Image (cartoon, helix red, strand yellow):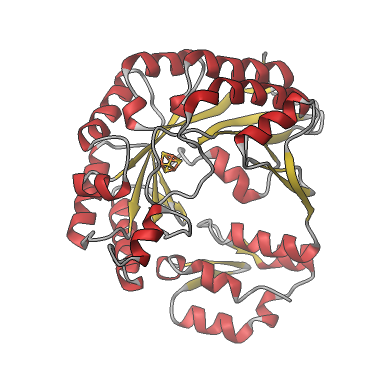
Amino acid sequence: MIIEISKKFPIILAGIYLHIPFCKQACSYCDFHFSTNLSRKADVVAAMVMEIALQKDFFDEKTILQTIYFGGGTPSILSEAELRQLFEAIYFHFPVAEDAEITLEANPDNMHEANLQAWRSLGINRLSVGIQSFRQDDMKWMRRSHSVTQARQCVQDARKAGFDKLSLDLIFGGPNLSLAAWRENLESLLAFQPEHISLYALTIEEKTILHNWVQKEKLEPASDEVYQQQFLLAHELMTAAGYEHYEVSNFARPGYRSRHNSSYWKGLPYLGIGPSAHSYDGQQRSWNISNNFKYMQSLQQGQPATAEREELSLKDRYHEHIMTGLRRVEGIDLAEIKALFNIDMQKNFASELEGLLRRKQMWMQGNRLGFEPEGWIISDEIISRFFID
Ligand code: SF4
């Protein structure tokens, strides 16, 4: 049921995120929710179909889905039939815009011809590909399930299959990644001319294999200076190649920003389906149980799989507004913040702002405040200085 956007009524745009909690193997750095035991894959998909039906009234009736995003985990591990079940449930219960952005996160080793064609026929029009590196040494410590040859081949195969919206991911700040090697990785990526690029700084999360190696001094994490140099090199090469650095970790050719992620950063509502998925209805945040078995059990009993729910206070909303706003190249509007939260940032944080502007870590134009690339790489730490008690 694809519907055209009516001009008669005010339309509320929203997105749906589906978390597919399965992976072929565990990458060393990953702390997302997933299982490598695939025996319950079909049952979890069946439970997700039940959850979609249970959440059919999640949005206001004037809401139209403008984005559908399959993330994970590894959504490309699903069979065509499993993906079809999820699509049928979504289209049955929600109106979907005719030009909806429909993204599937895909790993290179799943991107063979039959899958690519099946994804196209299901209406998937954007692939976000977990390349992570073009260096075989990195594949080893990352414990990725694909090879460098597959990483290169999959992009060409996706083009051949007709995908004209590709987002490619790389990770920087990894062990033994010199600036020269990072430059080579970026140049390899640019040679494919993807429409969208995500570059993530490696973080060493607790309870990961990587954390364990670092604790045992088998691997040394990169220094802050290395992170900074690699981030700035990426900014320089990407912008020189015509990409907009539109969000701290994301680059796009004009007209190809991720609509789904942009909605998060703009504070639009979204519904999360699947174990551990988060939702936001404009007032409340909620998140699902992070356990596949308990998630299924709950839905089989006709109960939502919500683990917790929180009402956002005005202070929470302010923090969230500046955290998401300052991730974007447009930055934040100080007059809007004053109107929404009664917080005069220019007055309350005058000396802080003066230092950041003087050191060229931030910029201010009229009422807008945003990060220079030199400040963006340490933006989490800087933003926390604007929090209120
Ligand atoms: S494939 Fe993605 S979700 Fe799965 S373990 Fe690796 S990084 Fe994590």
